[in-house]
Image (tube, rainbow, N blue to C red):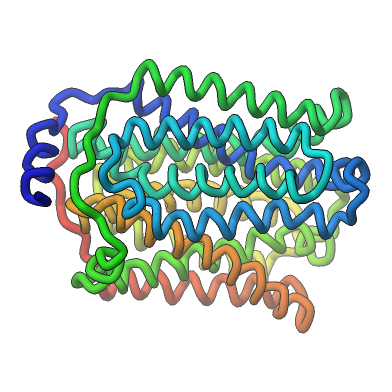
Length: 400
């Protein structure tokens, strides 16, 4: 049965890229990540309206992350017999329903229910994004397609928090989530119109997670990826305290520096496709090494505002290529089990986010922001050396 499914999938390998469908995937990413980030900019009015503390309201973010992690590990097995087009459309429906539930939630339980649905959509969509990209474009164009899809993340990073905060003050936080639901509806319509039917390409089971992880080079690659994301999120979580206590700049300057980071991150995501078409291994290795050098540079020159602003922007540029590079790595390392490998990668990234924030917090409380950046740079340096020593992605012919 598995052989027949894989043969059927091989018969549908595309010779022409479906860029409209790729754009619909980018739109889906933008909608999901925007919804994920909104509570951070609306936490205070949400807590006041629901008569709960900001800490309790913050569990809306925790619930989404935890459910996304679990979903990333089980979704391929749970939907192994379902057309991938239907699965992706279902995730977009979850995005719509989630935002509507949050917008009309009278209490914390319904708010959390809405965020749980978002976590399912978010974890599932991320897990399948690389595998779906492989089926929408010819193999040589996969890095470019992934770059387009991940540009939705960068766009959401730039716009979600400031726009959400501004609109929350103008129309109220509930209407902001209704606007996000409208964005989800647009996403669903575009995906319905552009995504082709995609039969499941194999019979993924929970055992497949272990089998894929045991393949040569996969476990090491996942560990290296987790270290890269851990180093980044230790840096990113404590960037504001660093700018306040070490660089010594005011809130307007902090906002400008973070906006510069977001713009550079967006450009880095777009740049990634071109870099990856030249050399995947060089991109995987050079980005964390550059980020490590910038981390150490910030420790040495962080008290100089201009130097901090430039180095933080360069960090954003470098990190923009990182998610695209690792997604491309898994499509080349495990092309027959890209969904399963995608689930493992999403789980590793979510674990890295938690580790980076948690361990960074312990270091910050003990020794301050400079020590966090030193630790971040060290972790990234180790990751870069690990990639240099042991990560060997399969070579794909360049596009004609």
